[in-house]
Length: 358
Image (cartoon, rainbow, N blue to C red; front, side, top):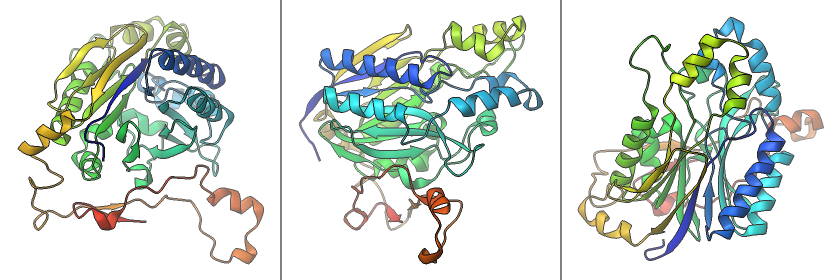
């Protein structure tokens, strides 16, 4: 575990080319190149960067959103698809680590999607593949529940990196599962916009404030750095989400936009928030995690493992398991083969705070 290491992190507060995954991947490649030229060793993109966040699920009734879902499913990508391959090659070419969110197509079902995130190393290898455990609110109309296979912290040259997607950062058990694996850098990814009420009502969910509260709370408890990255919902995305409906356009324009920013191990924001499209940077010195751990380290001396017991099941869920390998046909085999090879990094036997099975 790194105790004294500094690196520059980049938060890509960027709008994808909405519903165009290949063009969005090409834009990501250019952002990775720019961040690398500016000295970044790690670049993080937002939730569902590929192909953009499905805000239409919030503003259209379910019986009127079938065409939106059809287009969104077609624009979603496979975890081993050409768009992801482009991003992996860019990470290797520029020798940077990359975290990217994407709407993942299920190889077993044309209607199955996950809200997923990949951690890619500086050689272009996929280190971790996480699927959001529970889609939030109207997201359940788009994405299926994920599993625990991606609840892992990976050792990299930028420290021990973990990731949670949006509302997962409100779940203390999800967060603790990463803290207990020695997380030093926490990436939390968010959508650019998250409408919950029509414009004539007050009290729309303030994702800007909520994201800051969650990030500060986690970094303070974990004594880690936080990279909070949200996307940008631009005019193209608005037009594709609402069409010619002036009322729905007004609704989206009235909703608060999320920001991207960095948090230190005391829970304090580093520098200014990113509100306009661009790349934010911060120099992170992992040695600053150590002093805070002396005060209350919930993965070590500031806990009672004789009282509390958390078990995390990290098995990848699959729709079918066929035990007779001699009868396994190629078509069925494709259904149960995990498209991304996961790096097995965490040793459960060495870490008593967390029981870990697969």
